[in-house]
Amino acid sequence: MNAMSRNATYNFAYLDEQTKRMIRRAILKAIAIPGYQVPFASREMPMPYGWGTGGVQVTAAILGPDDVLKVIDQGADDTTNAVSIRKFFERVAGIETTTHTAEATIIQTRHRIPEAPLAEGQVLVYQVPIPEPLRFLEPRETETRKMHALEEYGLMHVKLYEDIAKNGHIATTYAYPVKVEGRYVMDPSPTPKFDNPKMHMSAALQLFGAGREKRIYALPPHTEVVSLDFEDHPFEVQRFDRPCALCGAEQVYLDEIVLDDRGGRMFVCSDTDHCETRRAEGHRGELGGELSGEAK
Amino acid sequence: MRNESTALDGGFSAPVQDAQAVFRAVMDAMARPATIVEIRPPVTPPAPLPPIIGAIASTLLDADTPIWLDPTLGQSPEVGEWLVFHTGASFTDQPGEASFALIGDGSAFPDLDTFAQGTQEYPDRSATLVIAIEAFDGGTPLCLRGPGILDRATIAPRGLPKDFAEQWEENTQRFPRGVDLVLATGDSLVCLPRTARLIAREMEV
Image 1 (cartoon, rainbow over the protein chains, first blue to last red):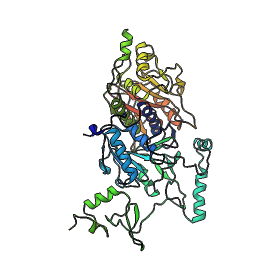
Image 2 (image 1 turned 45 degrees about the horizontal axis):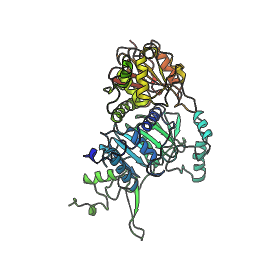
Image 3 (image 1 turned 120 degrees about the vertical axis):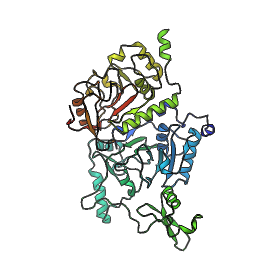
Image 4 (image 1 turned 135 degrees about the vertical axis):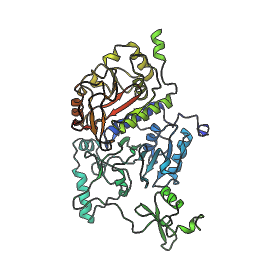
C-alpha cells in the first residue's frame, strides 16, 4: 500500500543515485574517523536551510524500502518540522513511519535524543545547523581546520573557563562540546547538554548532517564521547525540580508550557513518545489524570 | 563483440534497491568493525572479479573515484570494461592516486602506506581498499578494540599478507590519517576502519 502511494515522479528517497553515492562515501569516511567533519557536496532540497536539509540528505542516502522512520523536532513527533519531513519521506520513498522510538530503524532528530535507550541496529540522524564547534571562536575555516589537524583545542577550554569566570559555572547549556575517543572535539548539534551522556557508548550509530555548511560526521556505536569540563567544575546536566505533569516521569528533559495569562504553567516531557508510552502504561502526573479517557 | 556483451551484462537488476542494500551492509560493517556482515551479491561480473567486490564497486564508485586494480584484476580486460561500463570510474596505475583499490588477491598487494593516507587537515581523502580474502577464520587472529567494538573483537582473516598485523598496527598509529579496509569473502564482508586498534596479539597460536 505504501509503495502504491509513493510519488513515482521522483527517484526513491528523492535524491538521484550519483548524489547518494557521494553522500554514502562521505558517511563511510565519517564513520572511520569519528568526530571529524567530512565535507560533502550538499544539494538543494525542497525545503529551506534550517529545516534539516543535512539530516534529510543523510536519511535519504541510507534509507531502504524496509526501514521504519521516526522524525522528531525538540523531542516531539507532532511539530511542523517533524511532520513535514515524515510526510516528505512517505511521499518520495513510500516507507513506513512511526512515532514509537523502539519500532524505528532510523530516527531523524532536531535537538533531542529520545529518552528510551536506543538499540543495536538503530540509526540516529541529526540535523545540524553549525557543525564546527570552534566557529564562534574562530571564524576562518582554514584556521579551524588547522586547529583540528593539530588537536589544538585550548581555545575551547578558554571559552568554558570564561563562562566560569563570568557566571561561576559553565553556562553553555546546548551544543555543549564533546571530545570523541580522545581526539576530535565535536559539536553535538544544538541538543541540550542533558542529552550529551546518551551519546557516550550508545548502541546506535549516530550520523550528523549539516546541509548549509556541507559537512557530515558520525559516531559509531560504542564510542567514547566525553563532555569537556574541568576537574573543579565537572560536567553536569540540567536538573528539574519536579516530574512531568502528565506522566510523572523523573530524570527526563522537560518543556515548559504556559497555561494562562496569570503565570500558570506546567512542565511536561519534551519526548512526546516517551510521555505517551508512560501514560499508556498507567503512569500519571499531577495534571495527567483528567486528560486521559482511560483513567477511572 | 563477446567482450562487449560481457561488459554490459551482470550489473544490478534493481539499481536503486540493490545499491542501497549493499551500502547498508557496508555501513553496518564499517560501524561495527570485525563483525561479519552477510550479503548476497546482486551482480555477476566477469571472472576474476569476485561478485561481492563487483557489488561494492557498483555501489560506491563513479566518475569521481579513481580506481587502482591489483595485477590479478588488472590483467583482465573484461574486468576493466565491466567496471567502466557499470561505474563510470577511471583507472590509475598509481596506488597513491586511487580513492578505491580493488584487490583480487589479498595475499599480495602493495604495503598499506603506498595508498593515499589523507592529510592531517583532510584525513577523509584516503583510500578505501576492497580486498578479496579466503575466509574470516583460520588466519592469524587479530584482537581489536576501538569505536564500534563493544569491549573487544577477534577475527582471523585467512589470505592476507604475512606481515599484515604489523602493517595494520602502523596504519592505526597514523590516525587520523590512514586507509580503511573492506575484507570480502564470497558472501560476507568485514570492515576495518583505521580506528580498529590491535590489542597485543596474545591470542596467537
